[in-house]
Length: 278
Image 1 (cartoon, rainbow, N blue to C red):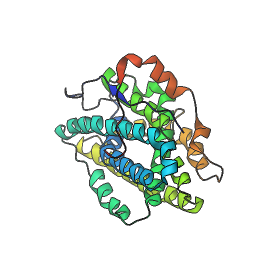
Image 2: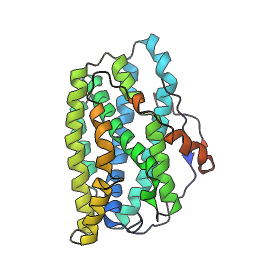
Image 3: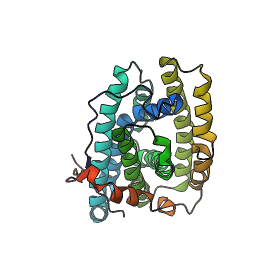
Image 4: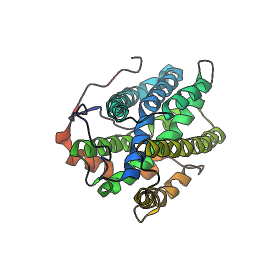
């Protein structure tokens, strides 16, 4: 079990921000924008999957997970709301979100009547992706140098909370006796879907931005993905760890998330958690 805190971030996302808000880097901006475009739909799916999983637990087990599930839902609902505001700015800039409709269409795979452990396994896989991404970003905050402080705060706060609640869906899946074969199957499927979707949306963002044929765009891509501090270099091993039979997300625990939250306590306020049935 994990002690979670629901926080209200003290930033204002209503004012417009620069088109290349990520330090003037067209690829990094397009990549982060693509991720944000998936978040409101994805966070709602995670909320629904965890709620259904919790409701499926025997009553004697629900008490054990109740507080954590409440706070997980509260954190994800806050992420969903703030990234919806962020995405509204992207829409005003003329970007088109094609990822969210595809994701919504896929969610029919998990309609009522389907074993809720499938949605939990898919959620646990996605949460592993976001947790290792979060650890990478918290460990390399210089990637956000040149950003407006409110946007830097948004991404690092989101990363800190993703690292904080990375075990919730995984633990519920185990509590419901989900098997390893389906955990691995959904992880492989989510890997293919996620990589395809994020690259497609990033490329679409670059096309709308007229940046796709610029040399600087692709040197930025090489640096972000494959450079010394690059995403692929730092995330491959923790990605692969998920396929171990003895894996648990807390094996990747570190001090980065609690340290950021402690050092930046003035940027948020704790709030009352959302109940599971809300």
